[in-house]
Length: 482
Image (cartoon, rainbow, N blue to C red):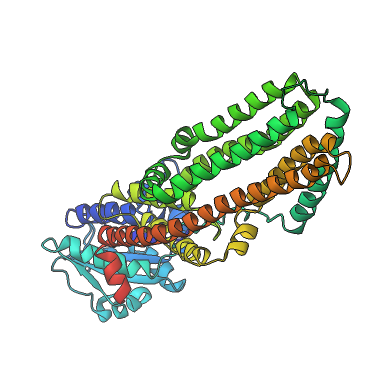
């Protein structure tokens, strides 16, 4: 357990000061770290055993010495320090023999006891450097004592390593899976359409053509939305995101869920339109919706759970790859916690806050390096799933266009044959251009976002650090110069 043991003799001159000292030390180090017999022992305990155990276990023993401490005597006239059963002397003896740090604390005008007048077993006490506290300068003297004790008393709180592992990058496995799925789409989609889709009636467009046009239209809508939000409306969007990310994860999801809901409804309408013409296409589209929505819903649930755990287990180690939203939310939490603290803060509060500051500073530095990544490295490290999804989306659009063109391409020399070549190529070129434009806007936006975030985060962390230093003063200031 360690901590501080307060040694004192009961009497009108010392008791009030001792209790006042115990209250201030307990507020800074914690109740379990400061032992005072009247406050720290439970009723029914054998006090001789309890006192010996705590002296052997403590790191520092403070001997409070008021005026007249050396000459104090019992009703029979015998000096208290000379009695065989005097616990004040016995506690000092135990601490000196055990090699503990013993600090004589002089109260008001008390003088250090001369070595020659002390019992032989505790004469070492006269060689220990004293510390004085007076009624006129009590707070300053006690804070200086706390600063000294911090170098001698081990902290009770140690950082708890996070059990969160950095997200595993899919790497080559995702690349191979994307290639296999793309090849399967190019073969299976035209084959299933040829087997199930009835010949279109005169004047009616086939379902595959409608789906291909709708897919390109959705790509264009996404590109326009990204261009508006990441380009023309970049500053308002960044301010909106900053306000949302400072809130809880639950409120953030409530404010941003309309976007995926809109995309889901759009896909549902396509399924309804296609179901009557080609059930096979509708089934493939529904499976794609499930593959997209399932991981998204699971990610939302995990983020809510993790958000609640971070508040309870604060502070927690953070991976260097933490997203901007998570880091900004952690900074907001640290800011909110420290704003509610009253000076002087406890040692544990200061240690937790300093640890959180160090973790956040490291993550902010990593955000600066992430902002300097090239496009390909950004896609491979930060957006592998989006890149894979766009590849499959583009391949599906080309396959749908090929499905529409195949019945028209009976020969390579006919007009249908030319259409067979031109239509998929045109769809691929248009889709590729829309995808690249979308990703370029997203890349430039994330780079700008990270730069703005780093400037803002450095400023906010500096303000929080200054607040912690102010709440910790003066003991931490003295500790830094010791």
